[in-house]
Image (cartoon, rainbow, N blue to C red):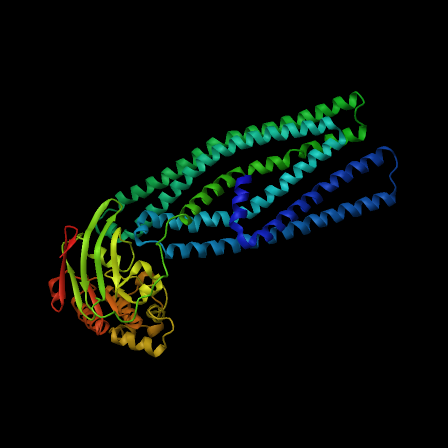
Length: 551
């Protein structure tokens, strides 16, 4: 548990002071919580000795009332500090994670990893954010409370203090054994949670295919099996950790019984006064409560530790090595091509895709990439945009190795029209404006006209300000494609990569999209991934991508 607290403090950064103050208030709350017990013993002593007066009683009641008020006040301050620190900290961590993902190679974003990312963001971070500060603050308060109790019992009689310490250590030992079991189970449970998220995402995204091939029953069985597996894991988790908690409860009961027995024995031999014996018998039932409360949180600590591990796994991943030692010039030096691949080799993990590939694309020309599916055409485009990095060789724009320039500078020079378009759940206006955020409304409308978007935009209830569904769900494929082209027109980059934008649209949309592409490509350097021969009729050079080579 101490390890988890240190990890949270390490993560806290600029919020460390706020968290430490919360711990201080937790300590003060603990002092105020157990102060009344000490005064109660003193009141019993005065009553036993027949020395209680109304004045003393009034003073005692006032002090106890002040301690209760202090307990509420310090609890409020601790909760406020720790809660705000937790939410602020994990807000920053989510932004930091988003920044991390922005610099990850595209090869990282497989279906499995997308499920992992969504689980970390939604489940793991949410769990830590909601539970960690309250749990840790309670831990600090409970430990301080147990130390105060042991000190108080030692004050009553050293043997009582020694027995309280011994039984507290027994409960700690049982709790640590329980925590080790829970940690092992929590890791497996979180891994299953990630697997379940991937199954759910796949099921939802593939619903159209599932229904069209009448596979609802078989696919439903798969996801039901995933839920069943998760249920079995949760039940097994509870079965394995429950015995330790019950043993802890038993140790707590034994400790109370031993304390009372020892107290009676000490009283019988005259080692302890009657009022102290009475105080021990009254308060013994709460002696081990704080340490027990610490280990009743063991499940939260185990899941929190597992969640922290998974979160840190993503933060520890290698990002694209971005350098800032050069910038791409506006014009290429004389004799230098606009784009050049020089002895480039690349492999997806161990599967080699390109080997010692070299080719050039001159300024304001159209280069087409043809070849069989899976031959590496899209890989070439991905290497040019640094969606992946080459294993060896160089990819250069205007004579500059793209590894030596910041990603912002690289992407300022390239626009990509993907075959599979993604639009955000926002207005059409804002989706186009992503191409150049500082563009005026007139410029955005002009780009929409050039991309042949206005024929369907004018029919929408709010025109260009109409909010579309996530992924462009409320638009046809051709309409979404035209909006993406409008975005590229607005960006106005000198290099355009076309991934056969008309490959999967109907004839009417194809004509509109081709006109939009003509507007986009005017005066640009084009790299076209061609799936059909009619798209390369106007190409200045055609490269065949096959058998790991470009020729």
